[in-house]
Image 1 (spheres, helix red, strand yellow):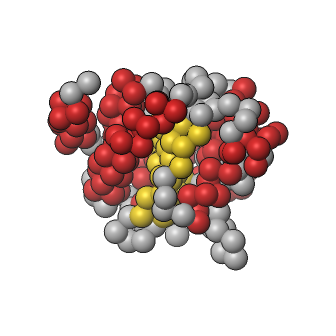
Image 2 (cartoon, helix red, strand yellow):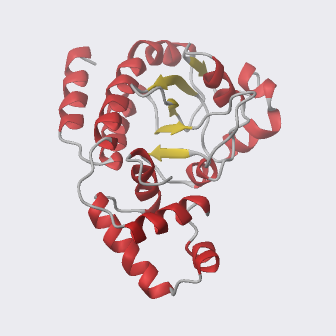
Length: 239
């Protein structure tokens, strides 16, 4: 693969990306030729002695069962997030049952493997405002040492470019959000995006709530609930 060409394609795709989902899709398109099937970014990594706030904010190009578990706070005590919470050194794993990552938490990693996420690579990200996160790429298959070598050479470029675009998008407020809409966003964030729990918590009628949510999606230029909460969090709309 021509190194310059794939970087040019990545930068061009990211330049035209105007949503979190399109950023992650551009990153996914860039990593597929290197043998990866998933890419994601998450923040609010666990830190010893730190109070945990509103939960995990996560973006992923593929919204599968693993992604939904991550959003709910699952896997946060796993060896990979723990490493990235304490080190800025990239980490990689082959996806075997002999991996150091697997040996640190066999039950958790076996569950992870069983959902089709095997070998991978991850790195800590730090935004201009100091927000720490983790960018990661994963394969459905076990990776060779050669695969990991190529990941270590090329994935830092993907993570840096994607995270830079994420930071750019999260600082842009496309439309005015009303006080009532901010309140709805706050409750949705606290209930991890559960419409049912939001209705129970607020006593609001379901139809007006759904209508308000559709309006918010349009204002924030997001197509799904997770993206809405993520962007609202970045924009400081959820206090």
